[in-house]
Image (tube, rainbow, N blue to C red; front, side, top):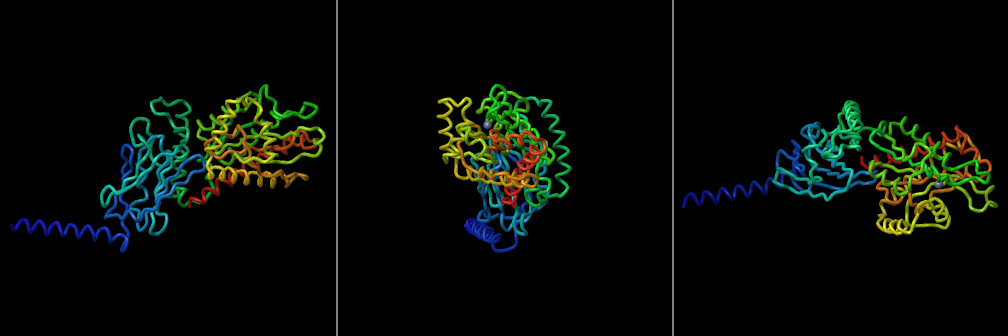
Length: 429
Ligand SMILES: [Zn+2]
């Protein structure tokens, strides 16, 4: 009899405590995020006291070839800055970062190369669970911790022995580790964008090559494939100097099928895809008139002009089969994807013009346009195609082969890319 009463009281007290516990964090002093624990496919957040799930604000950012799952934990303090440092995870995760984002807000960012179905919920009153990509937590093939994962886009495939390249990369990221740790806060959270580029990989795609000469001037001495390769190699130099990781689809005079170029870009986990081309007019009567620089981004929308240029660049290897798959892909393009490529195109076009006009007169702004280019189809990252000038124009074709002009144009493209990425970073802050 007596023990039953006692039990009832005990239960009542426990219930009251639970209620008080769930009310307290929102009303009173912040809870402390004490530790992070990695499971096979989940991340556990341990708090010092009951944590109110109403304080979780979650959103996803995708745009630069990666997916960032952001969790803002309101009314929360970070127990230690190094919470995420000891975490181990596989290549399914690029990084997990945590920082005191605002005085009362802790920001946790999980960055992955591919999208996955995320879920999150309280496991216990003081433990919150976030689902991670399958198999990302520990196990063989996992790479170490927070900063080791920065720039580790060329991660070692699970089950594969590390190649020479991968080993070299490991030492490279070891070096980055010390650089990145210096401000004690991850760049995503605080650091101003001065050396942001090391994390990004740019795919540079010089158009045509080999038996595919691209556009020719009437004399056939000026060939698109040569001009664009030279500009692309200069672009690589500028990007590398800025700290970017650069991958070329071709760096010599060889032919590569269009669909292989974007597939390669996807395999290499590029953050940006930029295809370099030179323009031409169909009718010779217009050859002395048409000149200037145009930047295109992939979109199903099409103007007459965009259609004409796309038809020219699409002509190689553009069979009925590919036309069908292109149409399918275009239908899956989301509005947000199109907008990001559009923004990239705008930044690059603006920057090319500013650079060239600082030294040259008569640089025509051909504008930024949407177009259904086959080479941009299938890219899982913002993708643009730059028509660097008209190879059919009497003096512009000469500029296209002038080293100084090529270099300025390449610098313009590189700076445009950097500006675009800087703007995306700001959106994260
Ligand atoms: Zn071309």
